[in-house]
Each structure stands twice: as C-alpha cells, then as structure tokens.
Length: 263
Ligand code: ADP
Ligand code: 5GP
Picture (cartoon, rainbow, N blue to C red):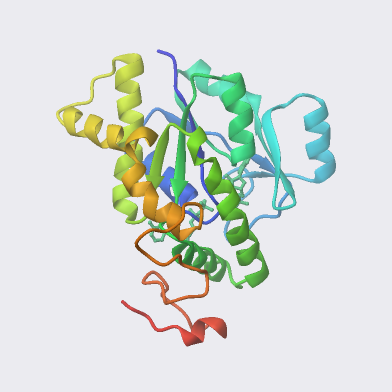
C-alpha cells in the first residue's frame, strides 16, 4: 500500500519535534526523514538521530549532485531532505514525516500535490518565548539573541498557515499529540481504506476539526496574539508582557526576574 507523505511545519520552538517524536511512539509504519543541516548539534543531539550534521562545503556538494528533495536556508544555516528518505519509505510502504520549514514545504507541495500538510502553532508569543528559553536552558545556556531571532521570524512563518491542510495549536501537549495521531489515522482511512479500530468515528471527528477550513475559531486568538489578525476583544500580547504559566524557571535571566510564576 502506498505510503502517505506528511509535511509538518511550525515556527521554531512551537513543539514540532516533540510532537513528531511522541507520534512515533504511538503509531507504527511512520518513518521520519532525518534532515541534513549545516548547523552545529544542540544539547544532546546526536549525528544521525535528530539530524545528519555536515559542513557547508559538503552540503553544497550534495546540493550540486541533486541529493535533496528540498532545501532551504533557515536562521543562517542550510537544511535539506535527501530524496533517499522518500525512496526508502516508499520501498517499505511506510508513511513519511518531513519536519521542514515553510520554504521547504512549498517546494515539496509543488512537486507532490498529494502531500498532507500540517502547520503547528504555539498558542501565543509569550508561550513561544518560554519554550525557546526552556529549550535553551535544557541545552545549557539561554541565548537571548537566538531566542528573539526565532520569535521575530515566527510571525512571518505563521502567515503561511493558509498553505497547510491541517492546523494544530500546540497548547496542551497530550491533546496536540492525539490530534496529530488522529490526522495520520484519518488520512490512512480516507486514502488507503485502512481500518481504524473501535475509535474510528472519534478519530475522524478529531481530524476533521483540525482541517484548516474548520480551524478558524482556534486560529483567531493565536493570529490576534501574533498581530496577524487585528484583535477585537483582547489586547495583542507582546513578548514582554505578563508571565507565562509554562515558564518554570525565571531566575536565569534578569528580564525574567520581573515576572512572577502563575503556576
Ligand atoms: P520545535 O521542534 O518546534 O523547534 P521543540 O519540540 O524543540 O520545538 O519544543 C520546544 C520546547 O517546548 C521544548 O523544550 C519542549 O519540551 C517544549 N514543549 C513542546 N510542546 C510543549 C507543550 N505542549 N507544552 C509545554 N512545553 C512544550
Ligand atoms: P532547528 O534548527 O530548530 O532544529 O530547525 C530550524 C527550522 O529548520 C525548523 O523550522 C525546522 O522545521 C526546519 N528544518 C529542519 N529540517 C529541515 C529540512 O530538511 N528542510 C527544511 N526546509 N527545513 C528544515
């Protein structure tokens, strides 16, 4: 049976890698394309596990040889998906998940109209900032410049949400994982006629609610918070306001000291 190609994009720090790794624990028959990148490994990342890490020269050589299905420059580094990942998944009859940025997603969609695309959003800029900082902390040092660089890019990336078939707001992790799983199962059901055990009806409902066309209500507060939609009933949130309930450790940075923890 033909595998399905899933493209997942999100502003950096939204939780896309976390969601994909949870999905892999829940569902079999899904391969994950390990991208090539010229950025150095972060924290506990290992070569060949999260990414294939390489030099710029080597990346360029691979690019010239036509190794990549898509590639893009993101935050000053190059990232690319090897065609081989797709070929291997196809040969095994597996689905394939690509965790790629909005530029790469546009390239893949142009070549493969049948791809299923999912855009993951953080609930608001404060939560995104907290997640970027928490991840940085877990890796050892909070690089504020890098955090703000990614925050500033988030709004532009989010404006691409219309290009995606499904929308996930990664607020409560378990719920977002269940929604992602439902999307995969529903697509298998519709495209391949695969049976979805006893939960089928509920799974199809959950997936349908995540279709972009059914996501306007969930999207509105997120778009307002990022200043993409003009806010009607709430003040637009800036990065510097109010504490974020997810912010577990605020003493590491001077700026965070002014915030109190709501939890
Ligand atoms: P991305 O792959 O989108 O750049 P990560 O998956 O690395 O983002 O997640 C960024 C940080 O946010 C990590 O520290 C992760 O543990 C945390 N995180 C992800 N999803 C959630 C969530 N729903 N609630 C709280 N923290 C989350
Ligand atoms: P990070 O460096 O935080 O892991 O990833 C930064 C961005 O690069 C994320 O938006 C991620 O989805 C994207 N990315 C990771 N791998 C690829 C890839 O192979 N191709 C493209 N186009 N983007 C990628």
